[in-house]
Image 1: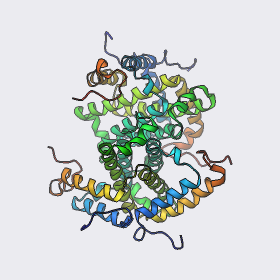
Image 2: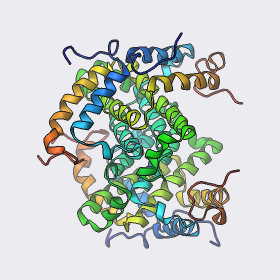
Image 3: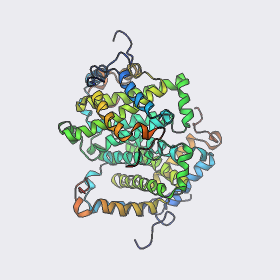
Image 4: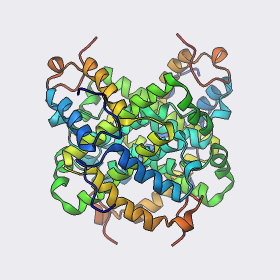
Length: 124
Length: 124
Length: 124
Length: 124
């Protein structure tokens, strides 16, 4: 990698290749079953959540202004992303395509005009 | 979106914009504190994990050959990705950059030559 | 069970027997590996958490005064308890004894006089 | 506590009192909202799951014969139990009663004769 990776210039496939290379160099493919990777995802999300469990919602938002804490949180977010990319590699799932298709369902379940400022979906 | 999104042609920033538009259209920004989003991430990962909890690791891998189940799993993966992107929007974290920097730490913690085929890091 | 079970008259072993009978009647023992049960625990905790993800901490406390929601939450808490009891059966762990011993460590890690009203442990 | 606690001689209410005393001595009640406690439960379950994520189901069962690992796992199980008890205190939920009532629903959803050795419920 010659220049730093950034979200506006990095494709999902680029990121997945970074993860796959790391896994291949360690011959970890046999550990990377979908079952195991879903557990790892959950473990990493918990490490992320640990930063927020005793903070109020307002205090959790203020982390954006605390460079040291934000770096720790960003590391946990990176771990979550890496396991999700590893899972997409393991199952052969194209994440962008999956998001696009799930969004169609989400728009039906949560019609914008009926959900404005409400977190619950409209009663069927 | 005129043509379908795919991982090799879609940047992380593109995906985040899809999520941010969905959130803005529903005025859900005030619910999207890092605390709440970390909980949502955990809830979605659990819905993903639910598909694997009683399957053996081998059976979990076989889902890749079952189109109906794979679609359900891909939907849950999309939900996980969307909440991670929402969190990166909420905290202003560049995911690609975070992954690149976390990988530097991972390579130190898990040196390839000492971790070959071993899931545990070398003893300090 | 002739009279309703209640926390002040029900031992942990009584509760575990209820769970073990349910599992044995369905011949589910072979699914109940510690790995699988830890996943089930995580899935059930997420179903519990789902009730709280978009509520503020104050709103989450107010659930105690909402009989319908409280029943739903109590059902999820029961599921969490059952999987924890199933895991203690699967591994042969006495929970009361484990709690007593863990509490010794917790009292050392969080000395009452240094932790008064503070959620973080004192710096080492 | 004069003699060691054990599951066959310890009521759920006894265990809850141990947890409540620990919380009260540190004046932590204000942190113990249901929202926060559900997050803590999830974090502790993840620490438990971490022991199993790369082990096969068979290897996870073998932990019962490894005293050192079993102690670590038992500590995590104790943490899960303590947060569940703290939540039951916070919401005023009687766990034994909740389990008894949830079991009635479980027996209907999973009729023993239709679920024998099958983890999925019968199709409606």
